[in-house]
Length: 202
Figure 1 (cartoon, helix red, strand yellow):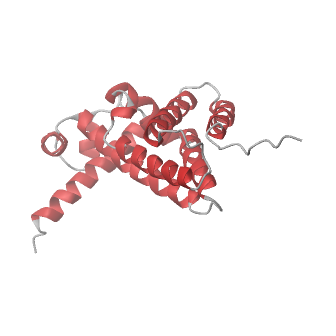
Figure 2 (cartoon, one colour; figure 1 turned 45 degrees about the horizontal axis):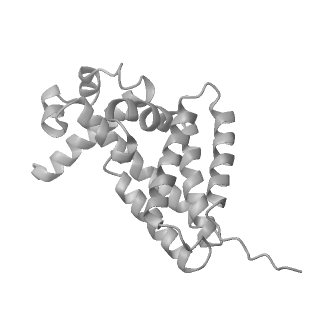
């Protein structure tokens, strides 16, 4: 019995993404051969061109898959936070901490920016900024963050800072030490958004 065309297309795409993800994660984008990972998936180079256009298009698909997994993990950690502010902080710092994981480090924070350019321009960036803007707007309404803050501008700056922190960790000779420094500095930046209690004069 033949599988429906839609199912066959989805299977082919999944095989190519899995083979490419393994190659990009272990030997890196530059050294990954299209012939090697199409062969390991039991497919032809023609199938790759048909579904993804080229190697760069396949990298974009791998990044989209990893990004979705990272978002789910970030949400899972942040959902345990006792307050909205802590949820926001945990969301940002958990993302940066993932730059310590070899596959994410290499694909998302080293090869991705080198091949595809500024992560702020990637397709997934807008969704991330929109989510941060929503959080900051709610925190402002609750009187947690300063009232004269533009939530979207702040969200874009925070998103850029977390991306830069992650790339710095990924390209560091000592990622563990760099991660600790980056997260401490990042938390300090976020603290600056908090509304300070009014000083009472005695």
